[in-house]
Image (tube, rainbow, N blue to C red; front, side, top):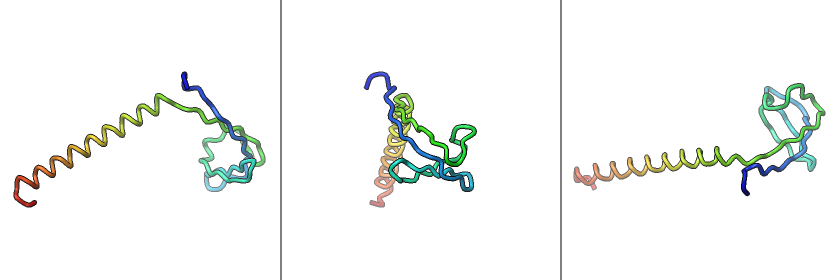
Length: 91
């Protein structure tokens, strides 16, 4: 894996844009709906677009850290509520 610059690509054609949603068609017939403002400037119906997928290790770590912090917060809250419940005899 290394530098996090691994990429894959899928080729699509822009079928249409409806209410701000671009409908893309893959070469094997699947449709893919994406926000129209994410398309390259000047994209028009019938255009072929190469979509590149790239791993982003830095953002992955940030997300994992955020999820871990939320889990810790929930565990603390659960433990506090359990302590409150056992101290007032409501168990």
